[in-house]
Amino acid sequence: MMKVKFAIPKGSLWNETYKTLERAGYVISGHERTYRPVINDPDLELKILRPQEIPVFVAQGSHDIGITGLDWVKETNAEVEVLQNLEYGCVKIVLAVPRTWEKVSTLTDLLKEKLSWKGEVKIATEYLNLTSAYVKSNEYYMEKYGEKEPLIITPWWRKGENRDVKIILSFGATEAKPPENADAIVDATQTGLTLEQNNLKPIENIIKSCALLIANKASLKQKEKREKIFDVLSLLRGVVDARKKIHIFVNVKKENLARLMGKLPALKSPTISSLYKEGWVSVNTVIDKEAFLSLLPDLRKYTQGLVVFEPRQILPFEEIGRKQVKE
Image 1 (tube, rainbow, N blue to C red):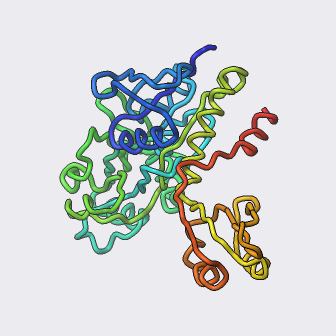
Image 2: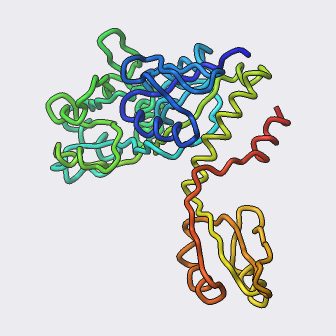
Image 3: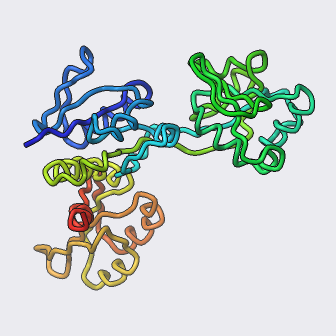
């Protein structure tokens, strides 16, 4: 079988990616010494890359699948198929300004204040395209400049015609740029603590970004590769779903079974088995973690005892199977 090339991210997404793949049943070795670690699936070939690069390489077909953030899919405008939100590594991409600027609490405020005072606005960021699109969508900006694109500045090239609003490439330490090197920044934050420590305040949320499993569209049209890609998707979605569920076993009198069933949500339908003791049954089911505490009073009322497990995976074979048929 032709190997499926799988790009996984280094940096801030690495630890959670490694744990997720491990929980899915994969064993990865050699990642401490090489960017081409070995995985226990002979049909997969791993390579560790920067998350910024992965959407581009997957779109180009250098890799069949990859894990990266939504922020970099949006920033690169990569033509990829998003297979699964992996629901880790979540950050907010925010617009932030110095905390002392009390009059500035929105992008519109920033534009009005700085354009009237300095005649220009400078925003430092790694997210050049994302920031440009966001600024252009602002109502005040559209009224003042129409379809003009902000001037995007890097050491190698410049793009855009509106010199009043400049978006400047930051190579890191973006929080340190204001106020001397930029009026504002667009950057990723989890808790906002780093912004606060650098005397900045977020004024607008641009997007929420989490890790995604993405695929090359042409690879999904190749039968052998598609089968392996859906294997990976099944295992990773199983990990995502398992984080939200718990597996419970309870013993209940038959006379109370109907009452309990009326209260008990289930993944599909509960498994009910007769017990050796006459008049009793065992109920085995998977429920949402969020529902557990609200169900506890009924479980105490109608059941003899309760065993709770946290599942490692819940594999959605039926759902993935339907998608395969549609392809």
